Length: 343
Image (cartoon, rainbow, N blue to C red; front, top):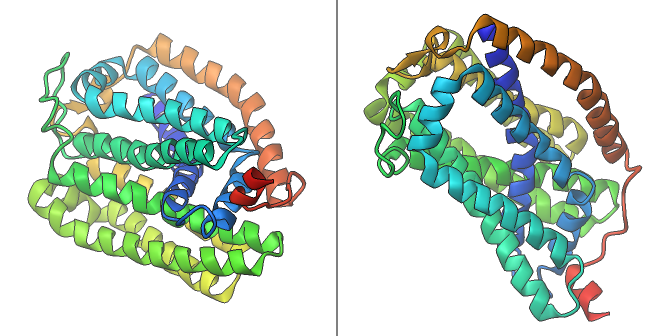
């Protein structure tokens, strides 16, 4: 039962990394789009694509947290009390980002648009970085068992955490550009297709280089994690992720954006699975195994029953939402953001 709960939690984390990661990446491209007039088209396309789904994507974060604190309370307490700095930073970023995105849509002047846009873009950058840094602290074995037993700074300011934080930002930008290129193609906006295609290829190359270069970082800073990634199931998952990433770049280059969405998703699945396989059987590497972290059988049984009932409602609803989005049923007209404000 503990393994089933872990599998559900990792599936939710993968969904959050894929869907919310693409949302965060949209904020990155918003930040780097340029001035109000030059970047208006890019920002308008980001708003058009994100509007139907951005709130739904955060359902998976709640899903993961509920499983984590219910099924593995000892690990949850250790993680949140040691890594409270990056986790609090991520929470603040999520709140500010959502508020700024909603309010920018109602802005009446260029000044208001810029102010809300800056908050949205910067929050979209720091939030995935903080989340990645926290995951890096866990994966590198810097979270001991106990209430605030780890160092609140070095647990997330270290080579592995900085690497994973940077990779989270780059991966989100990569996913977002792939999705936005497809949306631009469906909207018949060739200039936006070109813009996001170029961004997807660039971000994919950066993410790939970070991944390859990061192996050297892991070898010196987190050797146990490194060994798990170059052998067995961890290596197989990493290879699948790399091949899927390369296929995504090829599909984007060829303009096959619909298929590229799925290969990009497979690349994210490979990364998450590789991490899980690399540190097994530990939930907190070097400190707590899965069996030691698990709650009692009665709690795990009740959790699995509750999750099964919830997924019966959640999965069809989200499937319908994303199907409508992918088939263009919820599409709105794309208007450059500066033109909407000026009018």
